[in-house]
Length: 261
Image 1 (cartoon, one colour):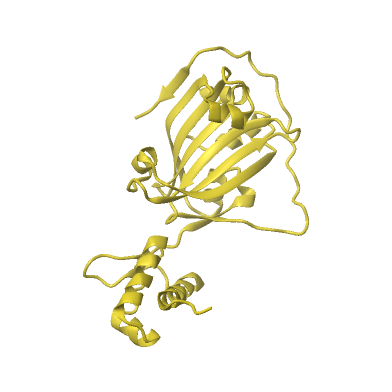
Image 2 (spheres, helix red, strand yellow; image 1 turned 180 degrees about the horizontal axis):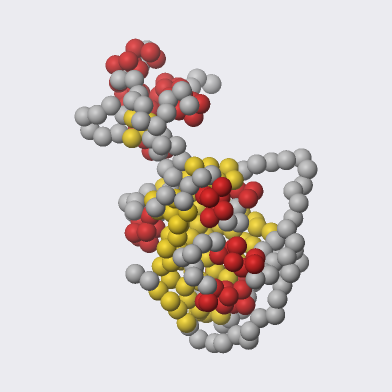
């Protein structure tokens, strides 16, 4: 099968960027140089440049030669329990801003994901996660009530929620992740500083105990120009963490929430 010319141009430039031959801030060859290199007209070259810009690999502006963007950081999906731990491990500064934390009745979607009755309380959390003060991910998380209640006496802007819950003995042992792409809605656009309709990477996670009890459901949306997701495979199974539970305070009813501007 013949590869379209614009795709050959795109792939060639993309490979140079990902291999490190072209680094952040480098300018691409001019349209005329690319046309000569590939024996192409300006149409396929411009189509390739547009595709690279849509991937977030290059930055373009009218009247200027395209330059290579800073490559997105890669987060391994097989160690996905803590955004804060990952960002710290790669030598960057993690941040988080809590937009809302609330105790409320589960809607039909969340009741199904958390395996609770429609009239049961759950705790919902909305946070903006950042890398070096740049908004990177919008985190929509829901916990079963006995787990989520532990967060009301915890500063959710101070660091890893999972780390705090694990310290309290919550058995966050297994995560199942579904990765896809979605268009940014108005809430995403507001908190991630992107236009409505922009492509985002989405990871939906269901976290369970070793015994299969569902404890958390999350819908996390990433700016693809600031984070990549990496899946690693191995022939040998990875070891599992072991946690213990603790006795919890009785539930109360109603809708209790805390919001920040």
